Image 1 (cartoon, rainbow, N blue to C red):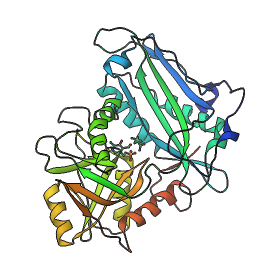
Image 2 (image 1 turned 135 degrees about the horizontal axis):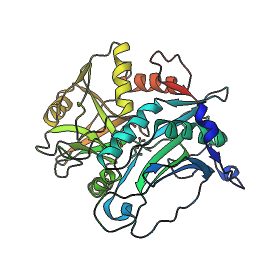
Image 3 (image 1 turned 60 degrees about the vertical axis):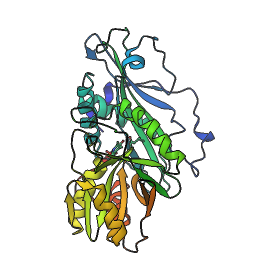
Length: 354
Ligand code: PLP
Ligand code: COI
């Protein structure tokens, strides 16, 4: 535990909701643990974080979050092993990315200790909320938003940083069918696509809803200029396997630099899986599907973990992916979740004990 933990005030909830939670049937992000971390930015600085009961917050109608969308977030998970130890996976990377996102949205960056010690304290207080069953974890949602007031279109002078947590199961249910988008764009050069900004997600909802109406669960975004190259999906990075080679698009200012993606690239090297980080054209993927060389597609992300894609749609036609005996996705998922849940060695030094 960090030394700064002593500085974090803890206000305990008077009662606990935990007995009402069915830990054997968890969905994703629908029930919340008893406490949250709360930290306020005012008078030009972040005030000390506190652990407080999970509760609604009161905001002025002129708070800039409502009007100008100054809001960024993160997603990570806490895992409990059979000996009741609590583990995080590369949490410093989430901290760094939160600040990268904040900077792009003109939100004041957080001190590392407020994030790390605050998170660890919260997890100690709510440790009973961390599920132990396979495939379940405590999903952690750190977020920062403009609570300061005023209709002037400029950065707010007050912000809130909150960490809320939700015991969760898998993000997707059923077979995952995705639509390769040809009309709308998620992000553009010079924009905020690389940031985990709330508005990036709001902007996806309408095109995704159109895809959902056609039977797809997610959209695979293509580049905004030509729509010829695959970038990422709404909530995960995308990997494609053609013959024996695993391919993913390079990070750019339009794509989120996923921590799962980065980890997969490193694990794949140690498994001697040939990997290419390069542009993937939609044409190449469609051709590979037609000639049988497209072996797998999967999404990778904290919520998604590694989610195999069963079929993709493109220009009113669906293309099924084969079911493989020796899938890279299944192997990589086992390797990464074994590290996350302390079932295997962690040669990369990614796991952090709380
Ligand atoms: N891309 C988008 C748009 C996401 O929302 C996410 C989820 O956080 C990812 C990719 C995967 O990132 P990570 O692996 O860090 O969770
Ligand atoms: C995550 O995987 O943590 C995310 O933030 C994706 C989100 C859309 C659920």
